[in-house]
Image (cartoon, rainbow, N blue to C red; front, side, top):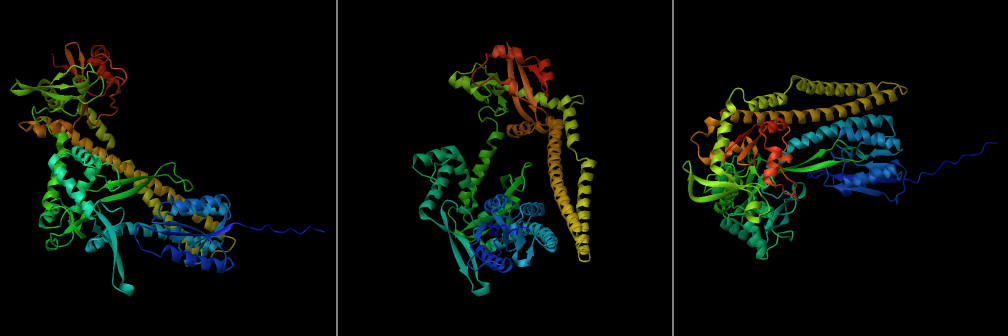
Length: 610
């Protein structure tokens, strides 16, 4: 007599996954998704009315990325064999990325876990549902791309009402929600409301900044006066700069309208709407992006986040609902001062017109050399000065001897003027480098081939979908497997295409930069002739990476490191920070011009006799 086998009880849980995206601010709420899923699961999985579902939910997370906290927690619970079925309201709540969706279905099959989609009545345990899930996954990814394209339109809609987009409100404001209309036409939006105490702080920051004309001095005074940031921290130069740069404080009037218009911003609304009371709202000022690392997997995703500040010609400027704090004339003055500070490093030393300040370094300790003026003394009709190491001047911790400034400036300018000569090695090098980065026919062909392959595979999948209608049950698994393989192949090719596009963009940018450098190299003398020192400084900095002057007895050797040269390495010029090497012994190692030419891909000339 055969022994009766009793099937083991599957005590794994049925769970619900719900997600709401922060991108569109639309879609069914988390609570509604949960209720739909519970009703569906009770009906189709024969669960009791009092069955307790565990709920995983990610609110404010994009479905395109798999690094959602509760999603990853759920996936790892599947791996630990705690879950036998996942119920979701719509497929795009689980994922909007086709490759992740395909990997997830394979993963769930491996652990005998079903995925149920309530709104489409789909179950991955059923072969017909698998085919539909593949199709819906492709549609979800396509919809995600469409959503991205619609963001600009959504921003313009936000601009109509001057509403706050969300996030931590800036210093000086809190947020409130306002509701308008009734029934289906009911609408709610968030707007900024002033906080009187913080408003006074913002006004004081602008006052101090315009007075001191310095981020650092502004931060120091605010801290000395006992002020704290909105996050209850000390003020830093970055905190001051961020506050000064924010257009939200600027009063919207004709003056500010003309300023943003001159800055090529996208202006929303007529000039008459800039009423002199409300503040400015700027949309599309920054964007956040995520980049998946090469080691990232569906089960262990790795992403890097970036916040990119957009150019002003991409901004959308409108009148906000909030009250402005700072007169437009003062806010614009602060922006111009901010620009002046940014340009400071492209300006020569005021007293001496030193051209190389900021790009010349001490070979012993690596510090930037300071400009030391020699009052009422002149060389070649120019104010005399020296480039000196600050560690030597102030602390006596460095033995580097100061370099004559006027002579060095003139020598560097004369050497850069020689770059146009036909046999110049640097120009040949830049041309060779530019040629490397010029778009190749092979790269373009690879991109075109990948796009055609993806299009062909997508057409083949559509064809197989039609075949499934008539295919026999015996052949159905093979057709489904073929579709799965094609979906994976599409995902792989899209990843390769994305990398090729990134390489092509980088190649194009590098080629453009090298072309500009080459143009300056070939026309340096013409571009700097009879120009003001400010212009010459800017041109020099566009082509010179840094300058190091090493010393050998009474001779100085000038090492010009020019932009665009591969393999530039400054390490061998600098002593260890713990051990400062005597200048004379250091020069014995490094200052032989021929040896330097062999070691470093730059030109090096002995010059400037003391």
